[in-house]
Length: 550
Image (cartoon, rainbow, N blue to C red; front, top):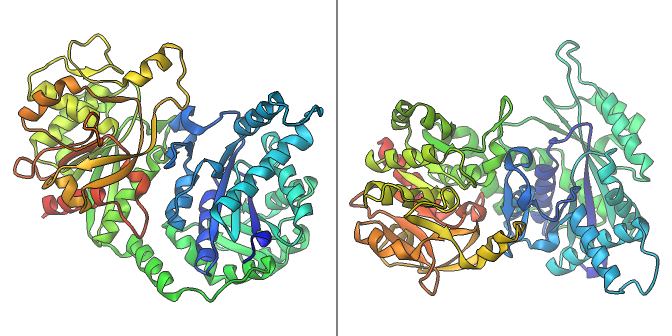
């Protein structure tokens, strides 16, 4: 396809937030990729935040880190996983980022003395970024997910950019609305009126949706399709039913049952190939494991970003959850993950014995002082009771602290993040971070993105990867203190992965003759786990869990 004919698909939401725009966009990307098109994806977040790094995970969900170090929304992770691609910072934008760039250009006299205004200059910057993302990926199709819901004040400028692009490329820009159709329990009937109102709100922005994804508890019937078609001015065969499913990986399969890729190719006038049957078979086989795997592995996720009011927000650790599932499915198992609040162990240490019921324990990333002693006690329990343990970033730091306290006898061992007055700071801040933190410069200040590590031969880590050199993504500002490395290793904990210069500890583990699997990584391996390509560390962990269960 000629570069000039790049197609753009805007995905917007109606009625309620959290309706599944990110998964819808990812699924659209997958079915178009399966038709031979080169697809890239963009997420637009309507926040003033320049990136997602300073957002509370219990309110916003996981912060997903790209290879180039950009801290982004969790939907970027969905795009990478579904499309099996690597994205960069050009694929993510926020209101803050767009305004920051426009102001920077104005200060640099790039507007040549013009009066710089919200319209058209902010939408033009948005359009510029969309086009650049398409060029960088040499994409046939650029998917653009606009965060939030139509009608929100924060969305107006992004919808204006979309409208302007439609005028510029009338044949190459289409709109997909993902809207929720409620079925009130007291009425027992699916209602279309909220979606009708959402479409009219979108019309008020000068945009008419080409497709409507009808989200709901059940499938959309023909009568309601006809009603939406009549009142929303959308052809009934372009209204795609999207009922709740057991697994998000069923969504592309459901889309294809309604021949969605055929319809998209037709409306876009795109040069689509015949569907790749072999690739589709692999996806179907993967998706089927979510339903058919009868053998359950019980995994305890011990953390502190679960509660938000009376609800559990598992999105705080979305990539970790999916990485566990991928490796379990590959072994024809199903992982049943239980959320364990580390603070519960601080209130009642007797609850630690409940961890014996699990086949494996994961301590994921985190920040701050809350629940730390509970995390350390859970690490100790996993080590002493030979329960497979995987520590991720903060989880590795807790592992080193626990080992220093209970094996080396350094009872006050800690991290500077929790107790800067400890005499034994086995986890300390990187020198490059000290000046930044002294000046309260926290945003984007961590060790972020892809870094190389060298693995020691014969270790669990090296055998898992099957290679000596790896690149993994980081998001942290504290490291294992080099002053304690020899003491720790002399007592049996092996630093099996280090930075190329040997100064930074990337992976810590106990040898297999001491523990079936006791390993932590300073990086976040979950960011590189994909449905058809599970991450090797998670896979080795899952195999250890299977052996424990036996």
